[in-house]
Length: 372
Ligand code: GTP
Ligand code: MG
Image (cartoon, rainbow, N blue to C red; front, top):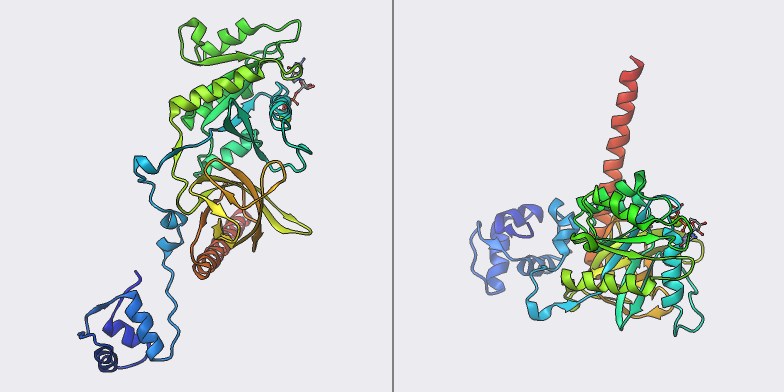
């Protein structure tokens, strides 16, 4: 893709091959009819003939992965990055309360004004190291993202209420995390309750192959009380410990790429998307392709509502400047060239709409059969 022979170009320009060959000679290039022309030469010839040459977009070029700068970074380019953590667990076991407790004890410190804006993902600091939390703890969100090929989580916190023990959604969460090969840290919550029974939780989780370290296994258990803010520091320390073992690294010195955490249409600001950068760095002003849309980053806001100019690996930011609203789990890639970003974004949009249409057609065909 991307190149043509003299003959092919002649056909496209509705010229005779000899005319092209003459022009090439004039440009100091000796060529035959079957000569492959470089992209630059084709553009040059286009100019000579007064035609604007637009590169054709091939299907594999619509694959966002096509534009991801190779991840075969040399060790010296890799830098430690914060772990990305998701909290899962059964209904009412205290996921939201635990997240709130972590955020309030850790984020507001030193942040005048506190949280002015909620962006669906945030960072806290423990012992001078950052931890990124994805505030989309629902299993559904986790599954959707994974189903769409987006692996964003490095560590899962499994919340189990000490007074309730392992429940159906606890098991579901374990299965999700295991399928994604994400390490699990167990937070035994509601330890302040009179009927708290952490031993029972350990017993029940052991039956699901999560054997506590205290019993010779390798799963970390931390007893916490989200309402009393107890055990939070220890939990954060354990997250950092696991992160260290995982050796989470990324190259910040290349074009950013990552995943959409959430997105919506804001009345005043237009499409707004919370993005998690997974490698590289993105900057205000960068052209970007996100899912089936594109744009140019107009503004970036971090998890505490501050405007920022750049965002590196494991950083969540909210951006504006997109042409349309992407979906959670969509991949994004920063482009160098705005024209290219537009071309790819538009082509992806067209393809997505075509696919949708053909699917609608299929459905109506099925309906037809139903009626027969
Ligand atoms: P869903 O989002 O519905 O799945 O629930 P959740 O897991 O987010 O639980 P949530 O944080 O909403 O807590 C459920 C209830 O448990 C609330 O009434 C909390 O106040 C209470 N709760 C959470 N953590 C603790 C705790 O450490 N101790 C006690 N005593 N209650 C807690
Ligand atoms: Mg909740």
